[in-house]
Image (cartoon, rainbow, N blue to C red; front, side, top):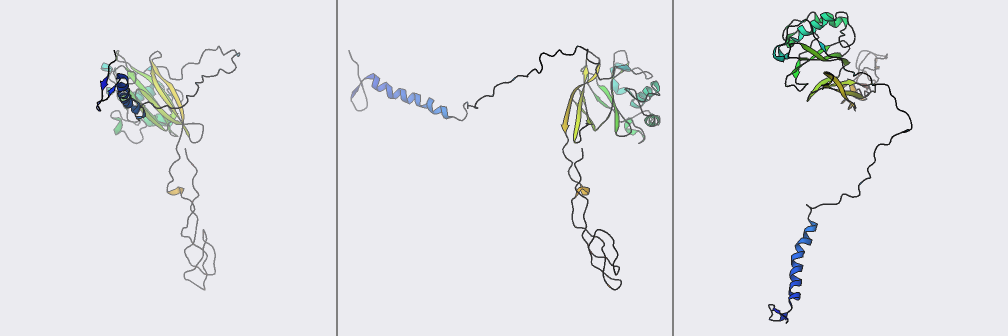
Length: 294
């Protein structure tokens, strides 16, 4: 038995003919949503991943053990009072450096090395607040930061050496009241920074226009700070200053002409003889553009 439905015109239609337009209307919004800008968009073909290539795989590698770490071994500082509660803020920085100098009076290189003129200047420093030291004192104001992750601050010291060199040293205190030096390096330093738990040194590299950045980090196994990361970076060219201007007009004295004293005319970069003394505006050249400086 066939069933029919009536549309709005009163004519009979089969159910299939009525459902077809309704299904089309239901699917149309879904198709329209495919053009929505918030949907997924193809990014194009993906490059094929390429792993590292092992060169000369048949060559037998070296079997010698690696060298010792480049950091200085930890060393307990002698000749200072015990540190209570692992509080390095109570340590006098000047008294600390003077104690190390007494322990190594003749050492001029290495982790304990201090040049003779710097050692003489350290003896003029006065124990107390480092910020109130005389200008001749090479011990800089200290900084404090938890570098070992034990929740206690470490003491970070800088000692100025001749020729822009600096000794950067870090100290930590243990539960027995001993002060332990966990970092000591002497470099020609551009700047020193603290980044998280790292001490970052910027030094000139062997290539003009580049600097070497070295991050020193606490190494729990060695119980000392080690240079863990190094990076060579390009130094941007310095902006031109007043002495870096190029050629340009400028006043100058030139040879004058005339039968006696009076203004003369001439041009030239310097003083020259003439038939009559006189001075007048001339054209000269400023200094050539300076080359990029690192």
